[in-house]
Length: 144
Image 1 (cartoon, one colour):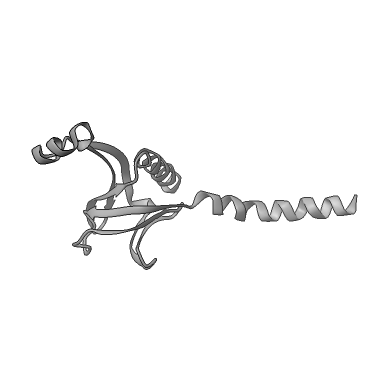
Image 2: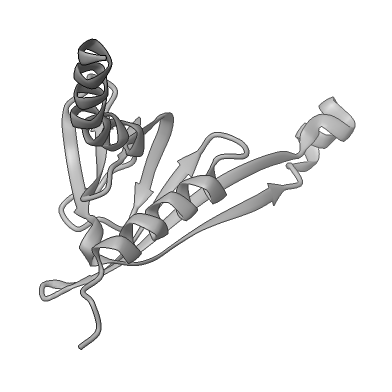
């Protein structure tokens, strides 16, 4: 009986830390396209979505920039179809078109507003947007 109580207490103490770790999600193979002030060029890397911030890391794992979740106004995913050039269509036929997904994160802060755009892997942009909006709503101040 005493052992069971000890295990239950340990599980209870560890549960919040485990739950927090599960909330953070890493998305490899993401490309920053544009929109973040001070970051003029495209770069490939990883997007880390956490409850308090969104972090973009370059290919070496260095933090390129972050966006506080409390500043997020909205996040959305979009799919663009590129039908391909004439030469590509002639060479590849039906396989000439490309489907690309993009994630747009709109922010607002006392310093200004931004619309940061990322190119993502297929079938991930909508899930990423939903996760960001979920965390943003949790960070939003309670109405008075």
